[in-house]
Length: 330
Picture 1 (tube, helix red, strand yellow):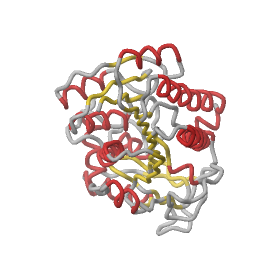
Picture 2 (picture 1 turned 180 degrees about the vertical axis):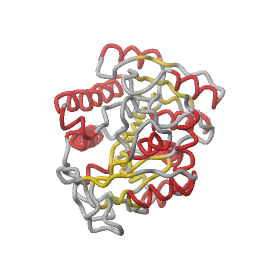
Picture 3 (picture 1 turned 90 degrees about the horizontal axis):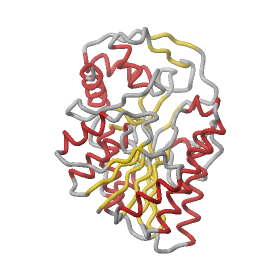
Picture 4 (picture 1 turned 180 degrees about the horizontal axis):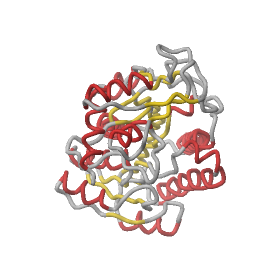
């Protein structure tokens, strides 16, 4: 299939492009480079030995999006593009609602106009809100604690309504848990602009001496050691999940959790990183962040049963590959 990948030079997008190309598909990448680097394109092509059409375009630009659709006979879209920092979304709600929701509407309208019926949407476990763990796809979505999560929930509802109105559409909504790790080559990985929002690149930058210490937000949760528990999934597994979702995409609406089904606490993650890489990570316990959940992990049985997909890499591999990328990226 020929697949348009929006946000294709971002962390998850770039790894998914590699997985798609290695599975025999072709890709067209669109990215505005607001939180990614053009060098990632060269590295994806280096890994795959494939030339990739690339457009530096903001997908809220309707004319530019339509121009791309008109130039390529697309079979599918995987829509990653969007702002993704939870804290920033609280500070800049207008920007988040505009960028994340408008972009989805424009991409969906272009799909209708150019008869592209396969659509895979990058969603998030944040849409579950404060549901009881493990999170299951059939749960009602609860109000989230931040505008970022709300934009994901709104986009899901928009796309579901569009699919209900057009039976020819095949829609797959993928709810990610906590991506970590990097490509085994060390060429691509999570390389955020500025101070990292996600914990693994933060730990890696502490290990590299760029940041002084890891702040742990709260140690009084009702968890194994008092720190927050999350479901970390290797980005390579996550990318493989997108390929499986695309290749098994039938007409109708399909929703899948992509995680490991295993919860890991912050302190367990730090210890795994230290053990995997023989590096000591200094930490400081600080107050809880408003809105943080004690535990968040997935029920992943549906993806295994329907897609034949399950995570292969453990937390040690994620820690090893994250550090391998971080220490070699400069």
